Length: 153
Image (cartoon, rainbow, N blue to C red; front, side, top):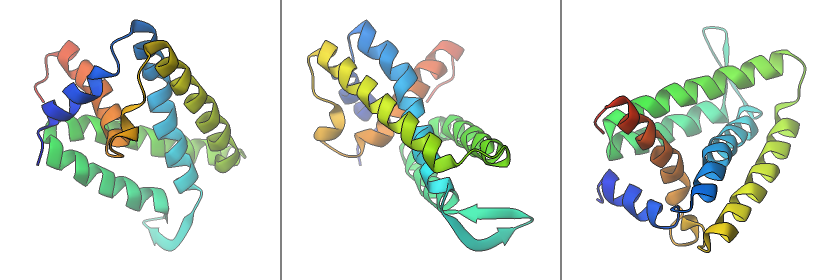
């Protein structure tokens, strides 16, 4: 299995341009958030302590297992981000906004941004090479947060 650093380094190769990086700081979390929203919209016939279980809960548990295998430290940061995403979708849903509609708008706009960033960069998105890079993108951003905070990963 590849190390987390090898994944992050390879991802970074097509993310060197400062404008593309800025776009990624906005669009990668937005895409992750929108996908959580799509999956949050699919309720399962299970309640845990008054909480409606959704496909998002199951998918995110699997995603977190993937991150733990790469880096338990980065997985802890991603867990915080995942919990924020779930909390926000619950808040949005409780305020009468259909998660799937907002998710669709965010998803489309964020992907447009991503492709503009890669056009500026002059490099194809990494996920064209390996779909795992769709999960490496958020970890790549988290690695910068960790570096700034002096947290090893």
